[in-house]
Each structure stands twice: as structure tokens, then as C-alpha cells.
Image 1 (spheres, one colour):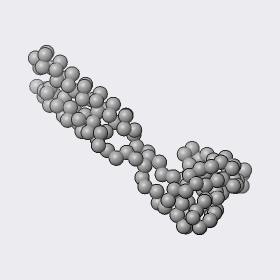
Image 2 (cartoon, rainbow, N blue to C red):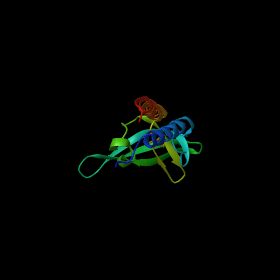
Image 3 (tube, rainbow, N blue to C red):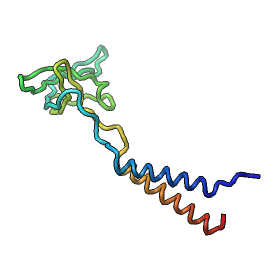
Image 4 (cartoon, helix red, strand yellow):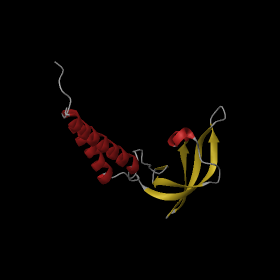
Length: 135
């Protein structure tokens, strides 16, 4: 004798989908806070490694105390691509270093909401169709 999966599985799926929907509505999806403060900067030099690949971008950061130079490694950027020479960017600056600004690596709110709505609709349809079929 096989165990019956109806209505336990669609009800469990319905609760899970409603939780995903609630997470999409109430989740804090912004990027993490910066380590220091976000400051404007300009790339003043691109340094290459021993085989000629761009490795470090030296940037001039405008701070209240004056201009400061710091380096950003290519590994700190998505895809390992450094910004171009003389390009303007925003950096996360603190007195002992700098880094690219923090970015959110989470799913967007729209994707989470779509997953929750889609799952809720699918589970509600399964419950409706199963009741109608007399399962």
C-alpha cells in the first residue's frame, strides 16, 4: 500500500511558498554596509604583473584630509576586470585601505516575489484539482 501524498504535500508546499512570498515582501535586500565611507576616486595608474596582465589599479581617493592613493587588485572586481585609466568610481575608503563598494549578491526582490507567487498559485491549483478529482 502506497502512502497518500495528497493533501499533505500540496499543503506543505503552500506553506513554503507563502514563507518565500513573505520573505520577498519583508526581507532587507540591500548591500551590506561599507567598512569605511564611500568616497569618489579616480584611476591614476594601472600596474601589470610579470606577464603583462593588468593586476592593480592605483586610485586617488578624495578625502576631507586631501587626496590619498590606494590600490585595488583585479580580484576585488567582478570578472577580474579593472576600471579604465582616468575613470571615475566610488570606493569604500577607510584610513588603512580601500575597496570597491559593497554590492548585494542576493536575488532581487522581484525574483523572490515571483517564486512565492508562482509556488502559491501552483499549490493552490493542486489542492483545488485534487479536491475536484476526489483524491
